[in-house]
Amino acid sequence: QWIATAIDNGWTSLVHNQLATGGGVSAVGSYQLLKANQNDPQPFVQHVAVAGDGSAYAAAGADGRTHYFDIAGFQSINALKPRWGFNPPGKSVCRWVAISQDGSHVATIFSFDPNPQQPNTPTKGRTYLLENLPNPASGGAKFQRLWTGNERTAHGPNAVSMGETAGGK
Image (tube, rainbow, N blue to C red):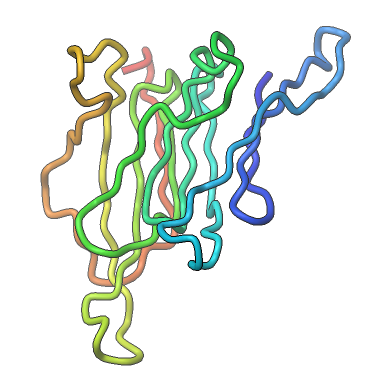
């Protein structure tokens, strides 16, 4: 019932698909990635992934962040904006995201230049598994990093995906 898009000039949008129930398709909200500085080029949305149950979606940003959008929260405030964003240490670009069936977990990968002062250095990757915290303590983090293994890859990343085992575990 929900479609998330990555469109031109750093915009992501949320579209409500009601064709199965006799309704139409309508854009219900949009959000543009923020620039670090006014004179910087506009960062683009690289990839989006919607939870199978329609509760949330994630967007990979060239601004170096993974953006998490709570669809139910959007419906209550009628303004599309990220519930949280993950920005790992160092300068990087978020390339791809995957989100669990119930929207509780996000797998995300980033590319980064390990030696920015050296021209033509091959990129490396960073991989993270994040958990959305639906009821954080007052002023507390809205997500937590779950995977604490060796998140760096020897080469730039190409894709990320998540699956669900039988029984929803």
